[in-house]
Structures are given as structure tokens and as C-alpha cells.
Amino acid sequence: MKIELIPLLQDNYAYLLIDGSGTVAVIDPSEAAPVQDLLESRGLTLDMIINTHHHGDHTGGNAALKKAYGCKVYAPEADAYRISTLDSGLKDGDTLNLGQSSAQVFATPGHTNGHICLYFAEDKALFCGDTLFGLGCGRLFEGTPEQMWESLSKIMALPDDTDIYCGHEYTLENGTFCLDIDPDNTDLQQRMADVRSAREQNLPTIPFTLALEKKTSPFLRAGSAERFAEIRCLRDAV
Ligand code: ZN
Ligand code: FE
Image (cartoon, rainbow, N blue to C red):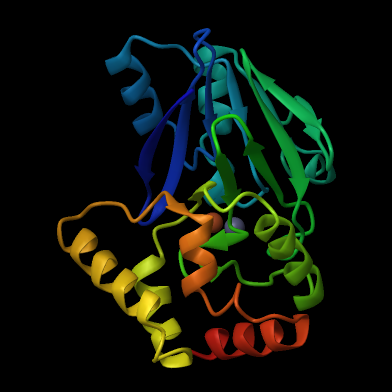
């Protein structure tokens, strides 16, 4: 499966997935036009839209893309009432087939109640929307710290060499906060040097591996829901 990053809006990423059999999906299209341009430049059409959660910066392009390509929208079943374009609901434990590739669906409440992540085991790729970010995690708009900690723990249980594809380019901003929390972490210092250099060249910091995130993110290193809640609070206050 081929994965292409599509930068959208100010700091969002959508992802174009092209399966070996020619099936094409887009994850979290906040807007339609850049996705259509990319598809056209590749001579592709769109078969599937997948949303990790209902927020407009992840679903805003659904309607126009659906109209242009007649593709189906797969989104959290729990968000059916607030994603009007939804065709097929996804829930924890589901398998979603994309041509010859397949993804496991995990429920990861915290940022929103309905949030899901998609894990392509064969491709070692996790699409996690606004649950986990580079050196951070989503704000708790609807869930509790305990729920988010449980969701992050599900991600932490995946293989260390999993590539993480998240919904926003927040790594640099997040990392500045992380250095305040964990100033002596040499892995974090090294990562931040790499992140600064990537961003100076306008390059994405995504994907990153789960192994790197576990070594460098105070959110994943919290060790307990209580400590995680404290760190999330401190981050919200910045
Ligand atoms: Zn969101
Ligand atoms: Fe978002």
C-alpha cells in the first residue's frame, strides 16, 4: 500500500492510500480541492473516504469528494448523528478492507467520544487522527484523562516499529513544551534538533515511529492516568 501525505488547511494532514489492487482511499480530508488535484495528477479516482472523528477539519471535504467520485464514507458509527455524509459505520474491533489491504479499527475516545484509529498491521501503519500527535496528544474535548490514557495505552501496545500518521503538524510546538517537562531527555533533545531542521526546510515530521514517540513524549512516558492528567493540564495552560 502506498501512503501519501496531503497538507491541508493550516496544519492538517490527510492521507492518500493506494492499495496494490488499485483501490484508493483518503483519510480525514478537511477540504476537497487539494485532494482532487492530487488524484487528477496521478490519474486516480477515489473509492473510499475514512474519517477518524467528526471534527470539521477532518470531514470538511467529504461532501464534495463524495459528489465528485461517488465514493463511500466510512466513519465512526458513534458519530453517525453528526457526520451527515456517513455511509458505513466503524466500531472497535471491526476490520476495514481496502482492496487487498486491511485495517483494524480501534476505539480511542478522549479527544472526542467517537474517535477511532486505523491500524494496517501488514504495512506497520497507524492512522490516529487527533488521538496521538508527535510529542503530544489531542485536547480532551469530550473524554476524560482516564479514557485518553486508556486509548494511548492501546496505541502503545502496538509494535515499536509502527509508523504513526497523525492529523496535524504540531510536533515542533508540542516539543517545546516537552523539553520543559523533561529537559534532561537526550532522545528528546536529539529528536527536537531533527524536528527543527525538518520544519526549517518545510518538511513534515510525520510519520514517526512508535518507538521514538515512546522514548521522547512525556505523554506516553507518564506511566499512569493520574500523571498523564497532570501533564495534559499543564499543556492546556501553555
Ligand atoms: Zn479534532
Ligand atoms: Fe483536528
